[in-house]
Amino acid sequence: MLAAERRAHLLELLARTGKVVAKDVAADLRISEDTVRRDLRDLAAEGLCQRVYGGALPVSPAVVDYDARQALASDGKRKVASVAARLVRPGGSVILDGGTTALAVARALPRDLACTVITHSPTIATALIGHPRAELFLIGGRVFKHSAVACGAAAVEAARNVSAELCLLGVTGVHPEAGLTTGDADEAAMKRALSARAADTYVLASSEKIGTASPYRVLPWESITGLITDADPRDATVGRLRTLGVDVLAAD
Amino acid sequence: MLAAERRAHLLELLARTGKVVAKDVAADLRISEDTVRRDLRDLAAEGLCQRVYGGALPVSPAVVDYDARQALASDGKRKVASVAARLVRPGGSVILDGGTTALAVARALPRDLACTVITHSPTIATALIGHPRAELFLIGGRVFKHSAVACGAAAVEAARNVSAELCLLGVTGVHPEAGLTTGDADEAAMKRALSARAADTYVLASSEKIGTASPYRVLPWESITGLITDADPRDATVGRLRTLGVDVLAAD
DNA sequence: CCTGTTCTTGCACGATGATGCATGTATCTT
DNA sequence: AAGATACATGCATCATCGTGCAAGAACAGG
Image 1 (cartoon, helix red, strand yellow):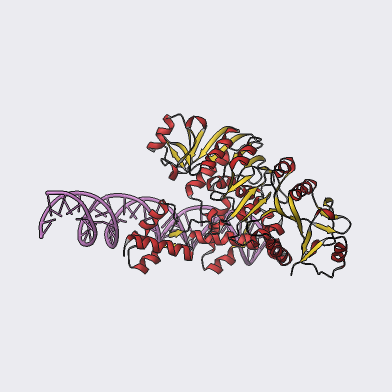
Image 2 (image 1 turned 135 degrees about the vertical axis):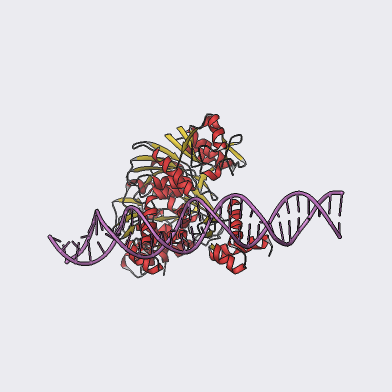
């Protein structure tokens, strides 16, 4: 096994499971713990991981959070993402919001789909670099760390210069009365700006978000085209949304 | 067996299995390891593979996992990045170009350094999400896939609205007569736009870039403050640059 | 057909790098 | 406080690397 392979393995392990235990990896790869420790030391020196007693942790909890959440809670999100990805037609254009569900949508897009993707999330842009036929447009601005998206006045301004057929929006709360909500005012404004630039807006909401509300209102029900969720279609909250005129796309 | 056959075999192996171990191939084809090494060296010089201790890995992001590629940043790039990162003062602001060397700089920044980073690379933005005290500003625009950075008119326009003390620029060629060069015209324009917004511009150039030139001129020597390289300070080319008035910061 | 040139290949050798083990120290756990 | 575990360091060993060199193949020109 090449040294570079080992290092890649460690990084992959770090990203996937969120931690590396020197002893386990050594036993796993049949190499000495010293070598693993040396590798981890080197990676840490480059800022690719954080050394801790017994092993190493990822540099950024936020990023792992992403991957971990992606891996763990992903069942619902993946279903939602898969349905959402199918809304993107060949040659079509889509505005992709940030967040883990939207990231799952990016990953669910066929690798050789020819389409235009507009996003304010560097994470999603990075994920789509490998799609050779996808046209990518990045909306810049001040990056809001918590959710890793460009927000603020500059971003809203930049969003005014794009338009698309479809906007796929992630939110943290979906509630019959409160509407679509999220945890940050700037982010809410950004989502409104994005939605305004698309002919149709669909909201991505895995089942755990149904019936909950966050502090800041993003949009009222009238402004969106539909909701994509893996929640049971017979669920009471989902039923109420449907009576409000929301087109519910079931994902399962 | 023809030399061209060997090279084709190596590339095929690289694409299919994701790696080449010099020893194995030599035994397999009944040729000396020296020949394999020479082939790999040549392929690497043409940018067709990434040389590592013991063999080689593919260079294409499509084949290799992105994290793995980051781990493969050459020793020289790491040294250059480390020196460059030290130019960023607490409370300071820096414009970071795209590319693997710049990414190495981002990773080399202390995790709790309070500074402002402006970049047109979603990859670099993603890498810095985990730096809690770093203010991040993303320059948007059409994403140029090859180097994963925002380019084009919109990006140049967006760059006009930022400014910083320092600009760290990556290039593909550093040549006494040709100046600083890169492989794409849009990218060259973008780099000029970035450099114009900073008080000081330093160029990141690991030793393999010294003395080479690419099609498109980025900037003449007069426009930059200095060059950061791991090349031998006594190197002839480096010496000529110094006589042109370039401030050379040695990295080793 | 011969001869000189150039290119390729394999080998030798010294330099450098990587790895595992031993040892003493630091850190965690109980 | 004591035992256990993980760590850094120095060292011996082995693998890999680059370079110089010589033998042979390919080739051009006479």
